[in-house]
Amino acid sequence: MDIAMLSILQSQSQLTTNVSTAVLGMNLDTVEQSADNLIKMMEQSVNPNIGQNIDIKL
Image (tube, rainbow, N blue to C red):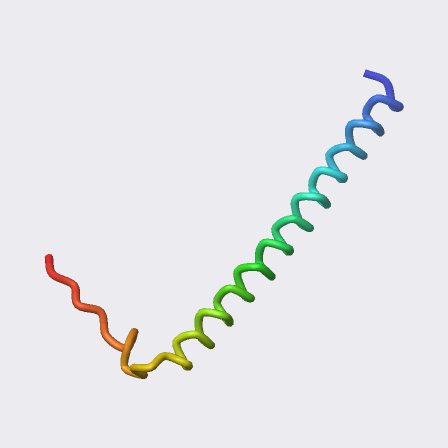
């Protein structure tokens, strides 16, 4: 391979990494917003004890 081809491949790899990082950041923002909305819904619940305990049987 020549130097130009290596440079192009490195550039494409860098772009892929940057895009992946940006998408993960956007996903994290969405998850945080969903969690905040869930907390607000639970706070406005008619029965404030809902969600306080989880019954698990094995």
